[in-house]
Length: 325
Image 1: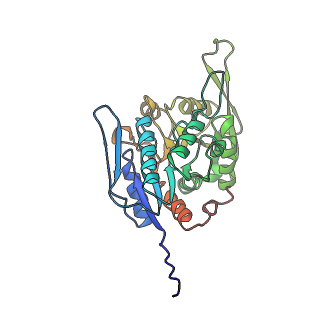
Image 2: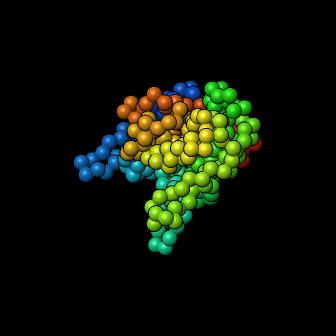
């Protein structure tokens, strides 16, 4: 009697938490697939419950959740979703976190401090995640915190493409808002063929460590300055950086960032500043009350969908970027 071999076809299944379902739906549309129906709710004491309404056995599961406010709730929900998938025999589980929470806590600045970004990676691995996809981590070395493959996506082409279409790049200077963003800013200059300027922040010795002096290194006079950063949180540093550029004779300042955290006074600061345009990606939800005339929001969904497609089919995520590793 001949041996009969059966092969189970690999199945892509896409799951969304409740933090930002709009982005997940957009990713699903780009992949031409449906989100898996999920029952999720909170008990009276705040505990989260999740149950998937379809079998996930043997699936290649992708769990999308952007870590927006209240950030701890949505991280916990994603962890619970990963645990549920693991216990339901999903073949592989990929955490898709367009904005990775706690990424700014990637090292100890002083004694007795946590390295919370490492803890985050450990939590997802312990929950059952096999792989992670994220966008523009605060520092690239966070990839090494997760014991498994990490697909670190870059929004540079999306943001720089917008700048190239809307501005005369011969008049543009790319600006790193601090020393930590110089490498990213250099990639921008390679993409746009523009000069680089750097804003150096230092303490004012005359004001007892309370005020930072912003010194501009590079040619900005009479030019359109494009500040490139990974995120805008309260907006204070970005607005001060823009003012420093204007003081050095910049004709115009445009701000680009991947993640629009936009906490507290950020919207008022940006809206009332001399910045001409603020360009963000939709890695985090930007509700109507945080939108303003100067704001442009670009969709990260096609990039996420392309990465998910490459991972599912065993392709190369690196191929999505020109010269990026």
